[in-house]
Image 1 (tube, rainbow over the protein chains, first blue to last red):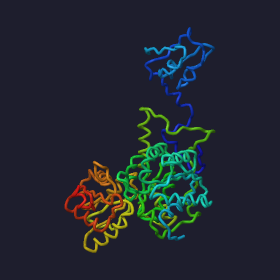
Image 2 (tube, rainbow over the protein chains, first blue to last red):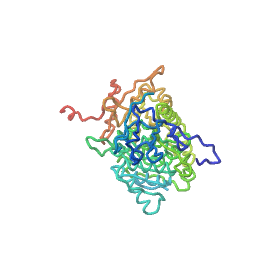
Image 3 (cartoon, rainbow over the protein chains, first blue to last red):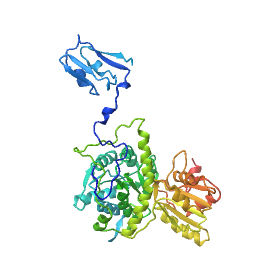
Image 4 (cartoon, chains in turn orange, blue):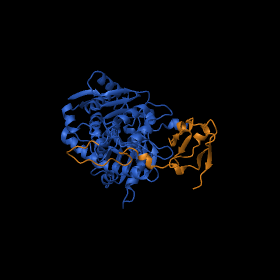
Length: 95
Length: 389
């Protein structure tokens, strides 16, 4: 925001986002009708699910422990489709 | 300095005087000479801009979008099919509120392919949020570019401006023009001082997703600012006159309209022919006047009402058509006049498509058919061709 001392400037028009991180306010979780559920018996900790998630909401907690952030998970099922061990099932959301 | 130069050269010199930081364009007839001249000026070191060569008009507009977003003054020019290819980016430039200037050289649209002049291309972009100014002659088109940056960059506006000039009729015509000095233009047009710019130290986002709870408000604001831009167009025209001594009207101009019974409305270079024809009509005793619309977007509804208040008949002549509707300008003039106590009949003549000359004979035909009560019609059609269809 380069404001000249001489003249007061207007506020930036609507639609121009001046503070980063605003997309975090847009919680996309409710978009989904399915949610991933992990089977820890089958999971080997290979990280494929974390890598492939387009929303970046599958997080690696420890060796064989993952967590999907349901605030943002849209239930697209890419993690389940990509899992080489069939360790992720897509289950219907009941809210 | 007065120079005898081609219209395209006049545009290039005007753009150079405005000191753009980035120029990006793709050559297309009849815009080519403008960008050839500019690339030469950059190569010769006369203009301190970066000239970005691209593979399409879509890319040219995108380069300019990024350049303005990064805080520099940008310029492009295109026409016809190039304008159509740019369309998606043009809406984004306006929506992101990036002030820049494009010369919209007016040419017909395919198909059939035509390189010749009409105004269907820029009229197709009318809903984008760009301010559109139409020039009558090469001095006006030169001066309009300098005005255009001043309008676009005004905090009250922050919208891009398209300077529309008739292809060939203006671009390829040599006329004597007064080219201002760099000092004069610098005094009138200060360096671009962006309200915001892409800066890693102070990041911002343009054109991001707006959900149903926000989109309509963003569009409402662009509409309010576009309507408000009318006053800025007027103010800049007055400031320009004070600085350079030249006046072309503000959002519109009138010629012999004071006591005119029939007022002929048009945009662009055809105004010159119409003024001569108007003089001839006056000598025959016909009370004709000519209204030149300089600013089509925003549309000067109130100013038109005032200028046409005493007319008994209004005839709109335009080199464009909305196929399946009729004249675009005629429809807007009708809408502007609608709802007053007394509204004159408004006739809409479509003429001069694809380079068909608009002559005194065309204008005579337009007058006769309007007086006979025809509402919307094509003028200057070759009857033999039509009858053989």
